[in-house]
Length: 324
Picture 1: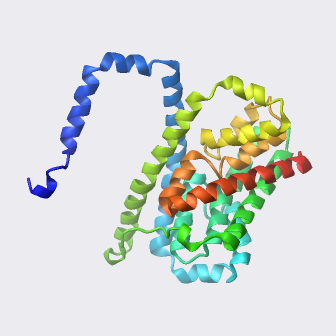
Picture 2: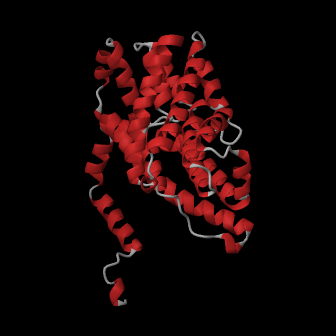
Picture 3: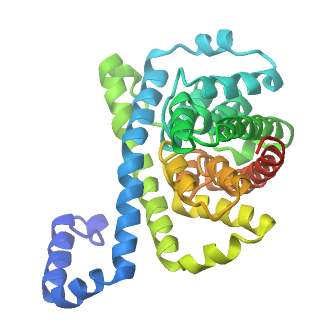
């Protein structure tokens, strides 16, 4: 073995050591996994990954198609030249669902591809937030989940689109280029269209999938540690209930196609609090934060996520007071 490789651990040896350790301590491991907390953790982890993975793959496929097959001139023609006008166009494109009828896991790689192709970051970020929150699939699911409260669909649409556009304009006014790391990928252009496409897909699936697992792990860990009785106590306070359900949306990291049914089941909370759950979840959750940090950089995510959360809660409260 060359001197430079002396510290490397053979993957086969590592796997063998892990397997032997699991066999040696199988009884304690089995007992720990059988506990209610461990069962809850595994349920949430698997649910987050299973719900998100198909849409993550969809987003990766769209991202690769944009990167390889769509010329940069297309976006120059499709979007207004002024970023301030491009922001609502990007938000409306996400709301229309023509490009991405999926969840937040798909929107991150697609937004990264848009930035790489020369789209103004403010417009790409407005698309990133609006696409998973108010696309036709999500709004239809919301209508089904709230058959006796049709105003919830309109309230979700209005509050989410306002948040997406406000964040795009806020980034345009206050964002700094050094805090938005341009998404990068290996160059596959010399290998031809098909080879470049699948090379890009493999790169993004490996990269984004790892951050999805990190986010799902954090969501499952926090979900297992939060007692259910805390939610019942918070539901009686109008302001606290909104903040609690917003925080719960961040922690649970539920796919936007399924979150309406969870919100509908939280009958002890006010309609405005449940609206905050629906608006915050597709824009700010643990797996999405991890994906944003991996795509655009940690400095960006640490600033973008809290600002998005604050605006989402604000517009949810205002919209709920008017429409609900």
